[in-house]
Image 1 (cartoon, rainbow, N blue to C red):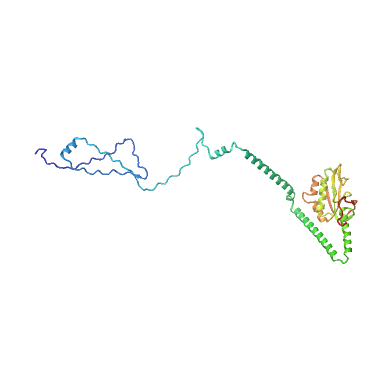
Image 2 (cartoon, helix red, strand yellow):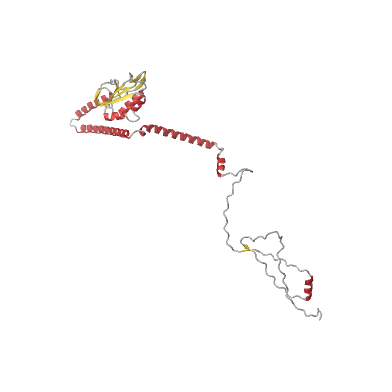
Length: 340
């Protein structure tokens, strides 16, 4: 049998092996993106049997590799990988070759040089004035209270006792006035009782006005001024302190001190109501000695002030002080008694 007459036998078609797509050998394979997977191309189904002429034509034609089918990536629901926290970027430098500015440096650059507006300047001046006023007020208050702050405990107790005695004295005076009122209301002869109380009141007012002599317990104070540094205001402070402590009659070097007494500086001494007196200054004071002496010796009081001026002060208590300097009664120019 000839070759053509031999029975034709069918042979299965051979599937050519798949070849990788033409890619440069040097380029590394790019991994699929995160969350995606690459699927292989679908299998090529086997070819149908062909005739002899088709097989002959197919053998003569050069075999070509089928082109790979591009794969379509499909997203698959895979869990997301935790993202790393982004790092804070370093502040950029102002110019090439300069170091990056830190937060502190930026703050300094924002504050200096200062950019002051007119409104800010006015507010600053007002705040400065307010602060200065508060400082002056605090300083003046501290100077006023400095004497008591630096006082010892026994000195503070003595001051409190003096205040208590003054309160007690005022309370006794109140009770005396109430007693006089009751006597006037309950007396059978109210006219006689009123006359008696009027005479007693006249004597008391005469002592205060300096028109009558007075005697009683009190103190004697002597001020030796060898340096000539004692001035009239210092003696006036002593008189005011004695009056506040309950002094009822005061005499200085033979001059009676009353409500209208004035003091002024004079050559080599002090003038009291126009009468010049010189050192030593002797005070005769009638009152309660237990109140008068502590009032002069309080911290920062009369005695300490005079001693700072290098003057010598002595205070002595006595059961009998005689104040015999008198003042002539003066008729007031405008004031008249309301009973006339």
